[in-house]
Image (cartoon, rainbow, N blue to C red; front, top):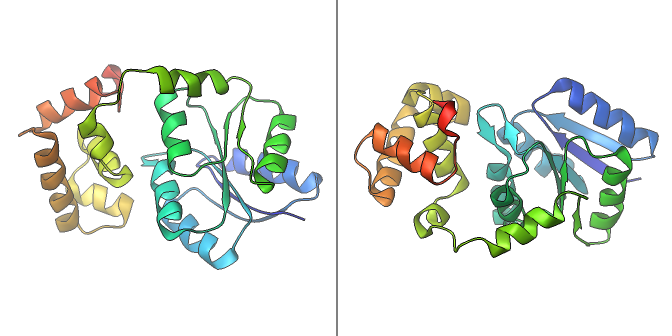
Length: 213
């Protein structure tokens, strides 16, 4: 019996995944919509497999992936997401995910991915392999973008969407002062001096779509 933890911001999705996996003999030991809560529970519950969405309301699954990698926790991660962006595939694999599936894939694909990652093998969904190749063949990534941590990217997106330092702090479990420090450092790192310039950087780098503003 494989111990599984689920991270997705839609309760219906979590319930559906739980029913599917438990019907196949796996044990879902926990589920959350929040990366911070999920990290604490993964440390406490020690699941063998994590099924992770990348877009968790205002937060990113990459933030959790990066922290799991930093702590060298042994959980094997399958990303299950709507995102078909080559960059998301590449960065998920870079931060340690072994599997990547698009939501809408057949249930059998998730079960195949489970079997593969449990044996330490990578599993890319039917529509994902081409995205990974595309990411590898793209022009060399912007060095500034690559230098940003998942947390810094998260703060950029929230700032661009008009969130205040207090609101960002509440979402990310940080003090407003810490958010301000992050914001000052990342704007210096990018080389921009105001929010409009930060918006242009976020759109140009593909962090947000132009119509998100």
